[in-house]
Length: 93
Image (cartoon, rainbow, N blue to C red; front, side, top):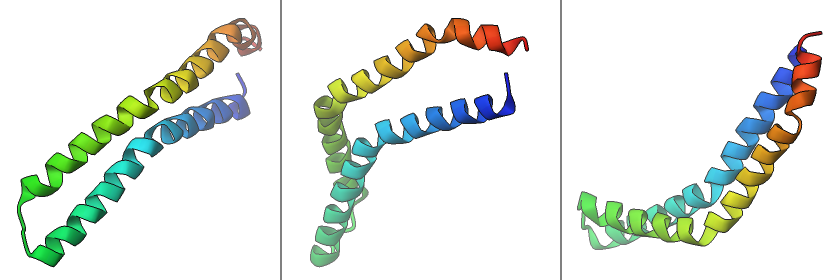
């Protein structure tokens, strides 16, 4: 395997991980920002008040985005398995 192949493979893996985590992190960030604004306006500084809504919102986001996440993961994994003989063939050179 060439260094370029390994770097490209690692880059593709990291990009997929970031793409898959984006919906959950975005929802968590949005809900956290809204709850923080409400806490600042009402001067309620309770830790569970910000934690529980984020957990519920991220769980709902996971339920909604799970088919898309599974499609991305299955496409990536099947691509690896289908190209595995090519990786082995060029790995010894």
